[in-house]
Amino acid sequence: MTGTPFSPRMSQAETSALVADAADRLVHTLTDRVLRPLPGPDDDAGADRARALARLRVLADLEQAVHHLQYGAARAAAAAGAGYPQIGDASNMSRQGARRRWPGLVTNAMPPSPTRTITRSSQP
Image (cartoon, helix red, strand yellow):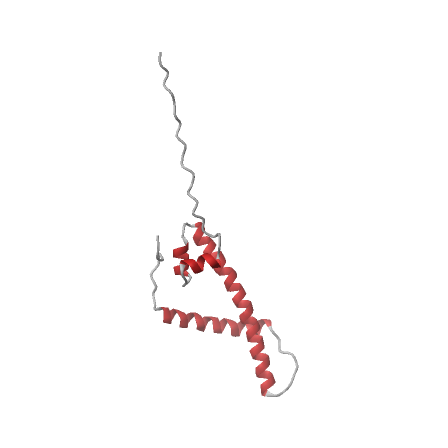
């Protein structure tokens, strides 16, 4: 079973732009909320450097969070019966890429077949 069981409402380029804009707004909000500028040089270059480094720190934290959330979503998809081809497709990577990123996530073990009871008829 390949492919994804959903239909995009917009193009990949539109989705990427929307996600990038949302991430930019989130990073801006988080940078303002969690990091406090330290007293330093009063020049513009020093302030620009501090803002850029604070933003980079928040982006690194966001990247780590996204990887964790992505693993959880891939694990949930596998638990719901998705294979590496579907997980890779949904992750915008190949089946092999998904298998390398999340080894052991999908097991191809066949469920045990039900045992059949053989009864012997008694003969007189």
